[in-house]
Length: 269
View 1 (cartoon, rainbow, N blue to C red):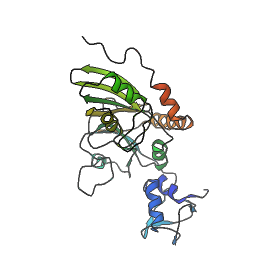
View 2: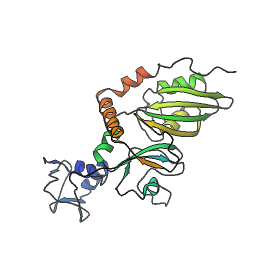
View 3: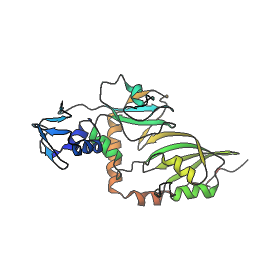
View 4: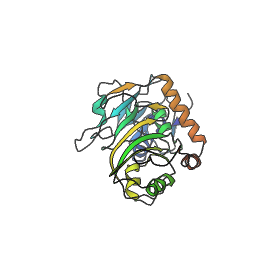
C-alpha cells in the first residue's frame, strides 16, 4: 500500500478523528517504528508500526466497517465520553462490537437521526466542510414566527460569534398562536446552529428533531433504538457527500432557499 499521512491512517482506522490525531502528533505522543513523528510525516499501513503514548496501535487491513443509524433521545451527549459523568450516545450502542464514533454532532437537548461508524474515511467525508450533505430538522419555536423572521433565517443570519450562516430551506409545517413548527434543511453543521439562528431573530427553540440526513430518513425508529444501515444507504450517503463537495454549498443554498411551494405560512382558519 502507498504511504499515507499518519493522521489519515489513524482516522481511517477509527482510532480517533483526524484533528485529534494531529493534536497527538504535535504533542509528540505518536511514534512510527519507535521514532517520534511530526505533522506531515507519512507511513505505510502495510509495513510500519505505530504507537500512541507507548501503546501499539493495531492496524486492521481489509476490515469490515460498521454503519448504524441511532435515534438519539434528548438528554444524551454526542461524544465518546464525558468527564462529568453525563449520559452519552455510546451507552445506547454499547452492545455493538465496533469502535463507533458519531458522524457529526447533535446537541444534548436535541433528538433524532444520528449516524455512527468506525469507518474514519466515511466519517471524514460526511463531516468535511465541503461535504454539505443536507440535513432535515423539524423545529418547534415560540413565540409564533413572523414571515420576516423566517425569511431572515432562510437568507442567512449573523450568529453570536459574528459568522453568517449559509442560506437554507425553510417550510412552515404548522402556524398556531404562540408557536410555529418549521422544517429546516441545512447544508452546514455549526455548533447548536439552529438554536443560535432562531435566537438571532428572537425565537426560542422548544423542540428540535433531525429526521433525515441526505437520502437516509429516520422513519419509524424509536428513541434509543438503532439499526444497521443498508449497503445502498451507505453508498447513497457517500455519493451525496461527493456530489456536494463538487458543488459550492453557498450557491446550492442560495438557489434552494426561494423555492417554496405555495405561501410561506399556512392560511389561518
